[in-house]
Image 1: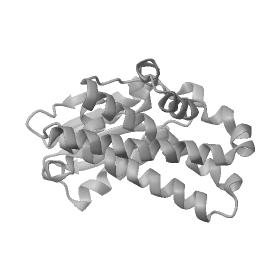
Image 2: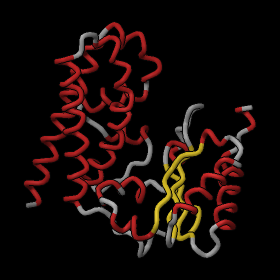
Image 3: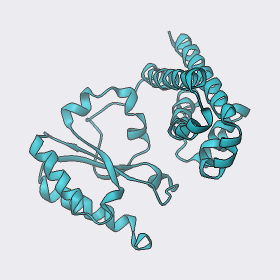
Length: 237
């Protein structure tokens, strides 16, 4: 039963199993995502990232068996990497892992450096440009926006992570929760985009009545964020 699920014992059990199965080889175990932010809902995953000294195909299969044996295994999510893979990982993708992570075991010290301002700008530009292309492609070529507007859920959800990077880049603040972010934002469109994400499930009927508005708002916001990122890059160069 869902009501029987308890996060802390679940994490402790996974931690124990990992350290036992990979004795002496686990460098880091970290928990990220909505549970860490205190924003988890019934469908929320438990995101756990694991860094190993080395990693083989057999290790991946062992991890699979560990997850398979966990209660509520359908909630399990995350990433398993070796130390060398983490070092080689594009650092613009590691911001939320580094900043929003609850450490369960070990440390990221000496494993990976924080992204630089230019790398954070890369993240903003890559994410915003993808959103811009996606929304405008749909707006131009879709035969039925009403049928497709619900597919924007993940794009709207991603806006929060963009705002986290933007706030850190511009004001050196890492805002962990969406509530903190709403209090921080002062631009009407920014606020509207984040509120749409927060209230997504409640807005089903509204989306079906006004699908074009949801596409237009996200398209305009993404295009503007792309330009903001470019201005930030110019100010650094």
